[in-house]
Amino acid sequence: MNTLWKRLPSDVVPDVVDAEPLSGGAVNDVWRLTLADGTAYVLKGSVDAPPDLFPLEAAGLRALHERAGIRTPQVFEVSAHHLLMEALHPRPDTDEFWEAAGRTFATLHTVRGDRFGWDTDGWLGLLPQENGWADDGHEFFAEHRIRRYLREPKVREALQPPDLAGLERICERLPQLVPASPSVLNHGDLWRANIVADPAGDPVFLDPAVCWLWAESDLSMTYCCDPPPARFFHAYEEISPLPDGWRNRMPLLHLREHLSVLAHFGTHGDTVTRVRDVVRTFS
Image (cartoon, rainbow, N blue to C red; front, side):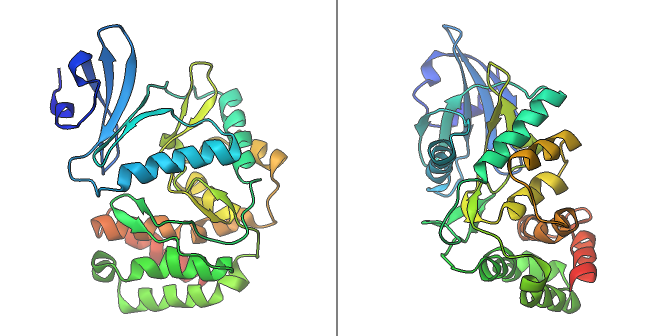
């Protein structure tokens, strides 16, 4: 049995009879722990995590559930180094599931805010997610979702001066590129891997990086990173119709994710090429 999870300070450790490693992304380790009585939990943690990373993740899960009524994992323990949550199920890749997930995501975006940001900064991976308040969404996105990453050493190493200049032009042109829209509750990191199922087969949303921002900014991660089937987006628009041309804006709004990847990993895969494609198209 894998025993690396024993480094984490969970109260269930003495009763664990099986520990199965799960996919935890590039930042954390995740295990499915089974107790002697058959009860299962998911333990997510890292001994090197910033001290508020997991408490803020737990707060984000709670905000999604309490403010929007969407299903998130129940959290049983939280510390500076771990989260202990209910064990859930792999998502069924059926039309019915993806339609339900699309409607649930749209419901999240019916929850309106009165400005852009959040009452605390958060985390996206192991880098701070800046959430300082702004009354203007274009200003917020430019400062906290694009320029914020242009200060990161690995981004400046990966991109050339013409790339950085193009990103600055995009920041200046955002009001012409993205139609003004209300601030809504954002999950902040909703790609396919962060959607699972509860025992009834209903969608459950994991690993948020919450803020108040545009619906399209949230949707861009879902659309551009291993997108779900078209039925997801059709069901979404039944609840929350999107402005004309939204699909064309998805690569632009997905810049945040590309820049975050560069800030974490440097010249990773084709990320620089994708950033340059966006700059060429929108600047």
